[in-house]
Image: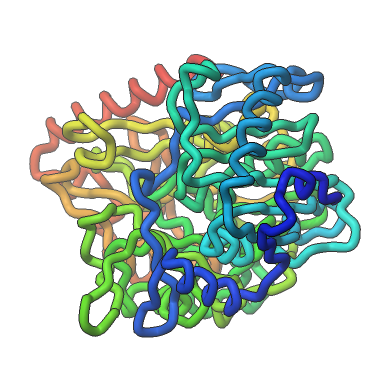
Length: 507
């Protein structure tokens, strides 16, 4: 990567290159960009944006993007000319920054499919984040290199540039750049780079997965697909298992590999007894907490406090998890788990999918949104996000599905649908499955305890459900029996099935 951007910076500006985590945190404290928790974690507030600006993402049209991107939905498009105007607008703003922080990292633990990343930001806290989430820089990167031009406080005159809002996240494959303006939510840095990887990797017959993965003592590999709030990070970070990665995994005929160098966990209601490894990783010197409330006197994080947001986050290197695969690589998976937090209360806690069902539920990418999680949303709303990560999977969904089907056939892994949501009624009436129940199910699958049990097929979704799971009450396995009003269950199941089928028509 060259330093072309330095020509726009006056000579008296201070540029910090590739600082350590401790040095970056010192600068953040000096610049009043955060404060320390009692454990030494850096705690920051991201202001207006406490989550992704989903409607402000753009891709620049060029020969490559025109060929592979599935345009439409919330994804905006820009011409190269308009991007050049916005890039110049960004470069002009650099002259107003007193200091800049840059670092070189990489993504992709498999050296055959690694990509270099440079981040340029005025905020040392964001450099901490990028240091955690990306991997050590490689001397060679077969997939090339991208630069993240980060201007979190630069609001764009959107009318002048024809944008939707004063915030913009722009991916340019030809220029090999990402331009982020007007949002301090750190997740935009991570998700932009992985949107690029998720676009490029299928060209190399690699399936990019919005998923976590772990390995047990017998080298049995499990992959956990899921949207935010379904338990992906929680279930992949399990005691007795080695964590490969918690969010972005590549899958080839040779095995799986972590794209990241760290984790980005949700912190709302985080408890040591339920998630001990994540709890300890979060509460350590060098970790970064976003939008987490601190006790004024003790400076202890109050994870139950959602006064800033329910989307409180923590980033930390994967080495902070005691049992982790630091080199980020593992064998091909034995089990794929599709996680859905079903708030209608009609899906079983576990079911074994046949190949056709695996494609159906992969392309559906189902979970549920609840009242309060989206402006104006009341009650429960079915949410479908193809490949369990539609905003980051920008190719035709069938590109990913074909890759998955081919890999399943070649490696022979089993696919399971796991409901981490509600039973006995919908959200507000029923009860959410306790994490201990879901963990027992997952551990039973991994141990082979569900290989020889008897299964039955329920009538609405034709799902194959085990009659028994070690450590789990059999009454919890049949969703219908947990509803006191069986007619209401049937109505809810019919409604959800029709929503699945309606959504699937586009495939």
